Amino acid sequence: MKKYLPAVIVILSLIMVMAPFASSASTVTMPPAPATLPSVHYYYNGTKESITDADWTAFFADVIQNTSYVKYNFNTSTQYLIVYDLNYTGMNPYGLQFLVALSEIGTPTLKNMTTAFEITEHEGSQVTSGGKALTNIEALNLGAYPGFSFSKPVVKPLSTEYLYVGILVAIVAGMVVLYYVFNRKK
Image (cartoon, rainbow, N blue to C red; front, side, top):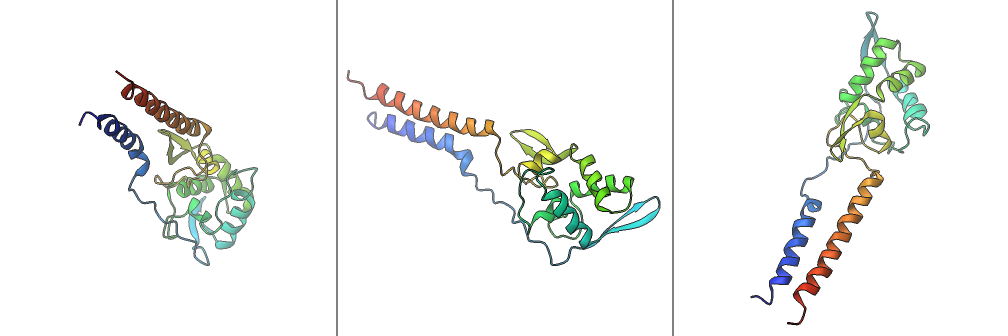
């Protein structure tokens, strides 16, 4: 038994280190947008305003797909989930922040929608990365949907890459040390 102890220790160490990476949690499927987006209504100065499919299409084409605003290139079939819920029947929390900002600005023109986007970009999102809550624009630039807490950044910050390299180096160094400790001649 003593002969196999080093191998057992190494295997158990690897299992303990790699267990968090082998999570069995499934990711949520992001459904594509319907052929026509439903209109969204809000009030500005007591007047009911509507954001139509054409308004959303223009906004996403000129703002969300514009790299001077959002650095990440979202999949065009699911990009509307930035503001809509998963069923495309209502707004997610970020979409509601956007609507509140727009209701204080005016009608749903492209200029007003862009201004509402700029107002909400530094507000808190539902997304966290590395235990830190991200702002809406940080989440968008990293490829996450700011209105969904389950959405994770697609573009990992450089510090995360360094973390993975450090873990790998520690594992290899630990294996080398254990090899020489348990295989030395007595």
